[in-house]
Image (cartoon, rainbow, N blue to C red; front, side, top):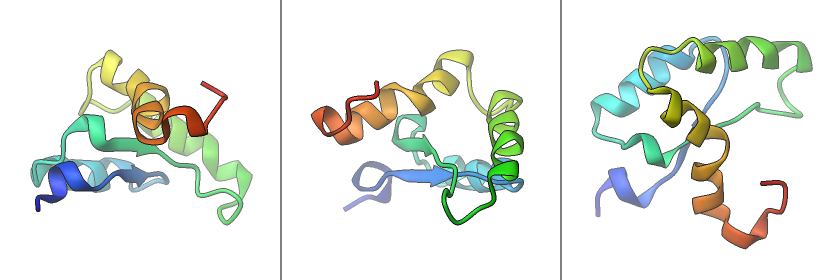
Length: 84
């Protein structure tokens, strides 16, 4: 069983670039990544920096960045989420 297609990964926070670069380096496809806010545990003021890290990331194409918020969670949760 490979981690690249058996698990989903989320990353948030100021270490976003290093976390995601490591996952991609292990062959985790961008389609298995999700954006997470760590809410309610992380203070809400940290979420803007996390979002900026994703938007400013050079690790993904614009389409892959969009997928972190839309297509990827929809693929994981399917009809269990209705906000998409």
